[in-house]
Structures are given as structure tokens and as C-alpha cells.
Image (cartoon, rainbow, N blue to C red; front, side, top):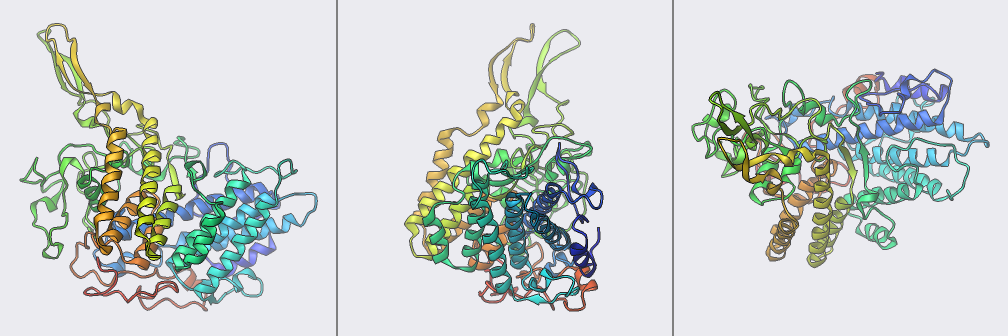
Length: 596
């Protein structure tokens, strides 16, 4: 990987077929775009490279957004040290060295009148624009004007974030116009479209939805509503902007990265968020069995094991910090085994007991209390008993959906929550309630649809009567009875909407924010933006450290760019606010957002 911006941007124009990549994972039937021989100049390989870079950018921003907002875990008691110049290094490099360079190369190839590359260039510009918006959202002022001319400006200066936003939206509109110009039957150069199967109309909806994201982020409700009025944006699951992973383990690995990190012979790796699991558990959220897969029915410290276990969960022997003020600490009921925000402890021997990612969105396993599965066992005396299945591999290679999950980017449910936010900002909580309901309906339907990836999970026996002489079973209850019904789903949605309608303004914002964030599980890039512009929810678990420093309002510049580019200086701290973040500054006490 070449991180030197000065070098890579100059090379981009000099050779349209040099490729730079970082953290890419190729798909089945898609050759690596970076193995292309120099000089080939194949626009489809260029587009492949852009798509994989865009997917990887989504992984980066989703992960960072979730960790700061408690959708995921954040493993540092100190915000300043928890975010480093390496946090967004890959996204920066992929955008400037990868996507920028590849778009320039496609533009050069498109000058050939014998090649109709409108689809290639249109989709490439949409992904380029979205990546720029993400970088501004998370970092602030970044190179743009001079970055478009790397031969003249090998060490580009930064542009103001607002200016880059305008420039990115200009690129987005260019891409959208190219896609809108395509008609059925046009002799386009074929492409491998990893998102929408070469459907330009769906890409136009995605472009409009990205414009909606920019409008709601900057508080431009008029533009947001104008796009809504046109009606051509992501409204249904079939239009969702997402990346589909595969099931291949090797050569290449196409599985969801969270599956690959959780379903291993060595057990589960990363932890799940105690705040998220606890909030869903408390509210009987019908998505919880799809989001998380438990390996145990009991967490040390919970009512099932009040004495705790210092070996597997050392905090179960501790009292909650005084600044927690009643928030969930360390353990949850029913075997939901995760970590608190800011917990930087090492890894104890808990890989075969802690909670894994579930069937959604990572293609893992559906939680049907598999740790309670029963099997018939023949004893030495010839009798039969019903015992726990000790041989059931709860996590491991090839389990569940084998990694065939998705990387959510913009889902129709997300758009409904944006519309709820816009309604609240406009003083129309009644409309907001309707959008929350619609967003939950779409989210639950999509999430529970992933249960089809792991049908074996629901066939386990959780109770039965056994004839000890023959081993025959009667009154069998299968695990599928544990899954939520349509009535359960409706009751949950009705309760959320009723609570919203009955709450005061702060309560309404908290409910909207909590449900939006829960809906964004696996695709939480926009949670960080929502938190900085609205300051909700105020119901978040605090950092484990009483004084973790001010909440980060932006990320530092990447270390590689600071080293290579003398025209960019590192920020003094993470308190620097991006242009659209006009809220009060962060502070450990009395600052913004309130929960931090």
C-alpha cells in the first residue's frame, strides 16, 4: 500500500492503469482489480476497484461511527488516545489514491467515442462523492480543489469543509446526470455492478438518497423535503444501498468481516455492545435474536450467577463506577455477554461464552437458545435420557449463514428515520411518529428475513417428554417457538410509537435516536453525525472512565498524510468541529452532547 499522497496523485494522471488498494476483499467471480497488468486500461477493472474501495470505506465509517455511539464497542478509556491518525488512514488512502485516481482513468477512457462508459463513470462519481462527504463528516477540512489537479499540486492544501461538500454534491449530480441519460437498449460497455446489477434507475435513487443524507446532515430541510417531493429515492428494501457478501472462505475470502472474526475455531473475537444489547433486551426488541448469537444462557454477575467469575469476566466481581448512576455495568441477563463503552481490559478466556454477531447483518447464526438444545442419549444400561447437546458447535467455520451477510450503507429504514428527524426539526411530531413506525416495520422485516440463512437453528429441541425405554419423544417443543411472531413485532412497534406520542420533546428525541441507532446496527456511519447534530439520545452508557476527555467532534488527519504533505498540519485535538456542527463544544461536565 502506498500512503504518500504526493506520489500517488501525480501517478494517477501519468498512468491510468496503476491501481492502489488497501483492505480490499475480492468477490467470487470477480478478479482482483489490483492484479491487472499495467497498461491494460480496462474500465470494468477500474470500476471494480472503485466499488471495493467504496465498500471498504463503508466498513471503516460504519465501524468508527458505531464505536463512538455505543452501537459497537469502544476500547479506550481516553477518547484522545482511542482515536489516532491511523483511524481513517485506509479510507483517506482509498478515496484519494484509489477512487480519485480510478475516476480520472475512467474519464480518460470515456473520451474514446467507441466506448459508452456512462454507467461506469456515473456510478463511479456517485461513490466518489459519497466518500468525500464521509471524509468531511468525520475529519472536516480536506483537500479537494487542488486534489483534482495532482500534477500541479502534488502537496494539496485543504479546502473548507463546506466547500468540499458543495464540490462533492457537484460530482454526485454529474454522476446522476450520466445515469439518467441511459436508456434501455443503449450499447453500454458491460460492467460488473456489485450493488444494483447494472440498473441505472436504482443508482439514481441511491444518488438522491445520498443527497438527502447531505441535506439532513447540514440542516437543509428545504432541500431534503424537495428531494422527498420528487419521490425518486430509496423507499423499499429492493432499493437498499448495500454490499452483498459471499460464503467463500479462501482464495478469496468473500465473507462478511464480522462473521470471519466471530465464527472461528478459536471462538468469538470482538465484543458486542452492552448498551445496545441491554436496550434491546429491556424493550423486548424482536430483532435481538437476529443481531446477536449467545453461546451461554448466563453471564457472570447476573441473577443466574450473582457471585460472578473473575476468570472470564473480572468486572463481575466489581461494583459499578459511581458515575454510572444506574446504567448497565459489566453484565446483562439471559446470557448477553458483551463489553461496556471504554472497557480496555485484555482478552480473558471467554471466546466460547461471549456473545457473537448474529445472522443479521453478518450472515452468522440465528439465536434460538441453541445452548439449551436437547438430544437423546442412550445410557450404559440401555435406557434413554434427554440431555444438553454438548457436541453442538455454537460458533465455528461454516456455521449459520456462512458469512453471506451485507454491508448496509443506506437502507430504506434509515431514510424513514431521516424523515422522522426532519419532521421533528420542523415541529411536526405526528409525522415523525409515522416515519418511526414505517422505519421499524421495514427494519424488522429485513432483519428477520435473514433468518432464512440459518434454518437449522430453529429445529433444535428445547423441551420434550421421553420414554426412557424406547427413547421416543412426545410433547416436543422446537426452538422455532422462541422466535418473535408477527403479533410480537406489531406489539413492539405499537409500544414504541405510543411511548413516542406520550413523551415530552426530549423523550421523543431520545426514542427516535435510540430506535434509529438500533436500526443502524452494522451500518452506523450516520449515527456519529446524528449524535453531533442533535445531541440525542441522552440515555447512553457513559465511558467506563469518569474523565475520558471531551467527546471527539472530529477525527485527526491521517498520520500518513501529515508525514507526506507539508501543507497539512495535525489538529490540536479532537474538539475541532466540522462546518455543519454548530452545537456547543464538548466538555467532560456540562458539555455537548449531554450523554458525554
